[in-house]
Length: 394
Ligand code: ADP
Image 1: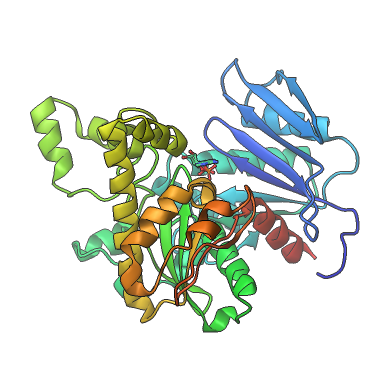
Image 2: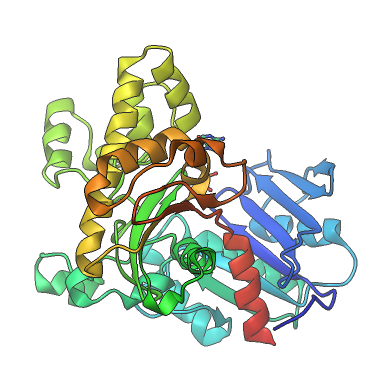
């Protein structure tokens, strides 16, 4: 692919259990003529917001299922059908190490994996089936959150647990946010004007979910998330690492079931659990500024855990050439970047206060002045999905 778009677009679909996000994307320019979001999919309260330029139209789909919502999305978009549909799929297990065109074999493969992400993969499959029904003959591509991390070596993806958990039940570390880690590592190489194939990077994707990855010569060699997106960094509502003995201890002390404790680790922990204020980093930071010691502690634990992991991820790299921040927090929170860099001076990372606090919203750039650069790179998973899709169907 080169030059400008030929006017054809790719529909990017991200079907969650109760939401559908979509965008019509021109793969080369990245222009998005129509974007939108359906909420409460599957319930009678389902609503669809479709945005075209500055106008947003909100409708209530007659059929609130994934099928009905996807059909309504296509109806609202109107015009020429997209050249292809690209789907975000949360888990590709050990089978999928790259994006692929959907066929019966691929669908069967995704179905086999759905136990690994039982809340998400069935919704992703519903989206694929709905798009196939609404757009017969239009090719579909799946882009996996886990695929980029399939280059991790065994020493990084094995848990030290009984061998047959791995051989019989696929228990291993997979990692997530792969599309984002891949994109920002490529963009960082371009920004640093160095070949990606020579760079050793740590990329930190800090959104509602947070993960960091070690990228050596353009390949992921380790990452902080594991079998599920609960492992690793402190997140908005997820705890990240805890002692594996914690769930049983808390269950016995509180009378909660193990499932309830795990649910609390996923939905009531992280920034929200520590601060008692919010899962939104901005609100936690504001509360800390206003004097909340719990909110201040939440910010401190968040940055400390991240810094500890950045340093740990230098082990598989052997040296660090740059640290990349992305995601809502990574792109927008100068205080988080400042706290993390402040803990990592021994790696050659030094905050440049003027650069770090002066970045315009939505723009990337250098935030450091030491020997090892730290930079912000805005992520764009939709664009990667659109480009993978266009390339595969070309
Ligand atoms: P998701 O992972 O759902 O895509 P985002 O990447 O949008 O989420 O990240 C959400 C997080 O980014 C929230 O914690 C939010 O507080 C934070 N965030 C977004 N904008 C800003 C901002 N201007 N300043 C600080 N934090 C921000």
